[in-house]
Image 1 (cartoon, rainbow, N blue to C red):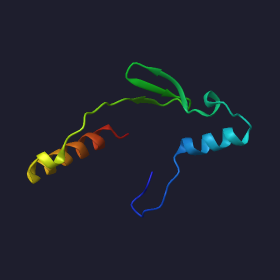
Image 2: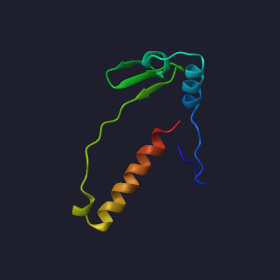
Image 3: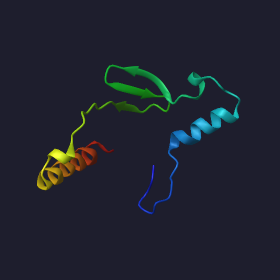
Image 4: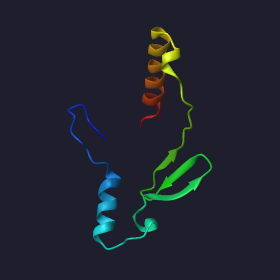
Length: 84
């Protein structure tokens, strides 16, 4: 993740993976942050439930500038609404 100051910020799970590696756990199941995958959701070992969103590609070259701007505004709205 990158913050607005262009500095790399480590997520919570980055530290968890580093800690597991340091403890000598080496299998993918040991260092994975995923507990399980259920239909459209991913259960993380930290207890968080994350949904999966599948999107298709859009050729921006085929869209007018106002259509591109509208698309980006809609995408920004979806991301802001889905944040905790």
